[in-house]
Amino acid sequence: MILFDFDYERADTLEQAVALLARLQGDARALAGGTDLLPGMRMENIRPGLLVSLSGIEPEAPQVLADGSIRIDALTRLATLENSELVRRVVPMLAQSAHVVGGNQIRQMGTLGGNLCQEVRCLHLDQKHDYQFVAPCYKRGGTCCYPFPRNAPEVCWSVYMSDIAPALIALNAQVEILGETGTRRIDVEALFTGNGLKPLALSQAELLRAVLIPAAAPGFTWGFHKSTVRGGLEFGMAVLAVALQLAEDGRTCTDARIVVGAVREGPVRPVAAERSLIGKTLDEERMEQAAADTSRVVNPLPHHGFSKRHLMDNIRVHLRRTLARALQRARDQEAGR
Ligand SMILES: Cc1cc2nc3c(=O)[nH]c(=O)nc-3n(C[C@H](O)[C@H](O)[C@H](O)COP(=O)(O)OP(=O)(O)OC[C@H]3O[C@@H](n4cnc5c(N)ncnc54)[C@H](O)[C@@H]3O)c2cc1C
Ligand code: SF4
Image (cartoon, rainbow, N blue to C red):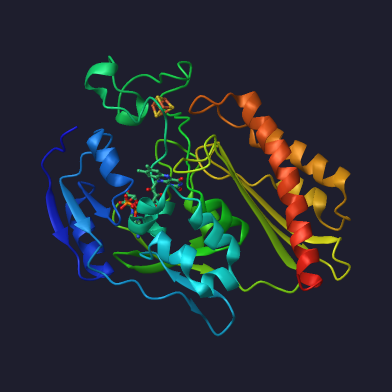
């Protein structure tokens, strides 16, 4: 697959990159590691006239701020994230979610910002269209949807597959966004529209500058699980991230955040299942019930050959185990193991 012609500029600062993106009015794209964007361009899902490379901008090292929160530059490579001693100690769930992305080569090139802003995926979208398909689908500006032919033109059920976004949402993280008029900050959760046609709540001339993760309070514990068929260099079949706050007895849940990724147009939080855990003792039965409720509420889309039934079973079984592992992690910490 030969790439079409496009212009290329290397920005020295994020502000310069934003100015270039704004000037081209949607015909320009930011290029970070390029591991998601360039395959998309090869398949001609997108045809930008200009690529604005961010590779000349040196990311700041992850740092702990005065209030105990941690700030991570959006240009940080995933390999840096997974190997950072600071990230592993302060936000181990983030290090683990970075570690399971693709293979080592992807993590050496791919960045945190690029991971969060990656395109949604669909088997029918991610193929060169010139000979396999008679017409472009809705996502490509066409008039049909191949896997879901009864969908209306404004509905695209492609799947958002970042491994890191569910972990950051569970951690209640925020993103700092730089635009033409300055900086704004939103919850990572608010970055996702839930619309496969335009999955991110960003304008064409906005870039992620940093991710901010609040300090963990005493009693915090977490669990993370990515299901894949082969266990390496593979997008997730389903991704689960759990953050629990436990009372002093180590069993009563005082707060819960559950996030399911890779099964819908954006990460999903089953709020009712989270609430069903709060104020309760986390025994087997309660965790089993929360996991079963989650698999129903999330209502996974069949994707990449996995049926809806299979994904529901996967979420139910692995969420129960992920919750149990989070509880066990808290016990191990308490026992100094
Ligand atoms: C073989 C293969 C396997 C993969 N496996 C996984 C996987 O298991 N899990 C997973 O999560 N991903 C996976 N990916 C997807 C992707 O490689 C990673 O998510 C990677 O982190 C993307 O980062 P990047 O810097 O390369 O993004 P790029 O390709 O440079 O950019 C991706 C998108 O984000 C935009 N962008 C980049 N930086 C910013 C910014 N700072 N602010 C706003 N927008 C920005 C770009 O304009 C582009 O639209 C895989 C990709 C490949 C090719
Ligand atoms: S789900 Fe979306 S990307 Fe996939 S074929 Fe339908 S419109 Fe296209």
